[in-house]
Image (cartoon, rainbow, N blue to C red; front, top):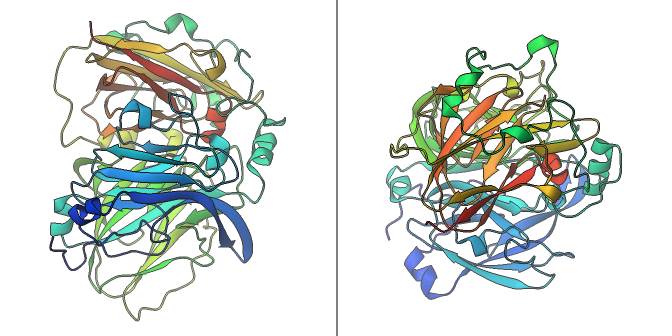
Length: 502
């Protein structure tokens, strides 16, 4: 394999490792290795022991060559059992990485092998145990295409985290005002009602008919902020916000060619923080979300909910230093990296902006502008269902159709069916909803049909409704949940139960 001049150029020690050995040679020498283990970061001069997913070259994450299978031996070198989910990828259900659905967690010292056909694009991997993700047990998973190499663009990966020096259990206790006990996916709060808006049980399983009954919603902003209700944007103030494991007090400086061309891959691996990606004076072409191509859009600022990704093509205007920032929504905190040509002076960028960033949760304007390059094939809908998302800060319980995971009601469909699910958010916090084992297309926003992006995680603002469509895949139990880890920990998860076709 002939590598292009910039193909597989490592952006930094903290970004996904570029593997220079061609895939067919690596296959002959055995699978890649990945270790879930502890590591130490310097957070503004203070040592922090966190967790990570370390590849064979000692850096975080994995990068696969075009056409390379995901052949990985995962070893648990942590002091407790864990399991890793390959977010957005579609392995066989047995390899999906949800504890006991169906595979058990890896015990300390145990190794497990994975082998599946990898989807190309920008993905990531993380523990499917919320409190472990608070330990930063997550890393990028980049799968290149032949076009990536032919493009002769420098690859830069930026992975975003929110970080607390407190133990994850203390973080949950601070948020909930109580003990953070319970099992891996629920804090034991099942069955607590959320008031008149919280149950939604009577709507489970009903057909939508295009949601004609929601005609009272106007525009793409839906009912967010109606009657003076205020959105809850951030339910915890973290100690630091990281880009590639560093803050803006000591940011990563990525050396780029003068007037060079960059493909920036951004992964929001935070547990509870939505960010605005701010390119500043640079213009970028948005080319993919959640690993899947979208029709080109020129952007200078783009929002990312938890678990979402974005790929942008950036042509640098010449020599200089160019901050690429991630702004915490509804707050002044920010993080980021610096793209700098050789010899360029790098000015200090303060970790606090002058003004609070706006709410990414405010409306659906951004989502409405996205269009898939390859939309779903047009076909009749076999199963349509509304799922009511509800919850409140006090008591801190978040539900789907009035249920937590402990007493959840599965969404039952058959393999091969065209399915439409509408997430109707009746709470004042946004919910990034993630479906395992499938890609889906956004097909309606507040009842207005769109030919939207193909995703694996969709942001549902307060008092809004988002409809997704997909073709049901392998007959198995697939998780469907909010990717705000504190919401997931308190029970905001159900399952898509797919049975064999009749």
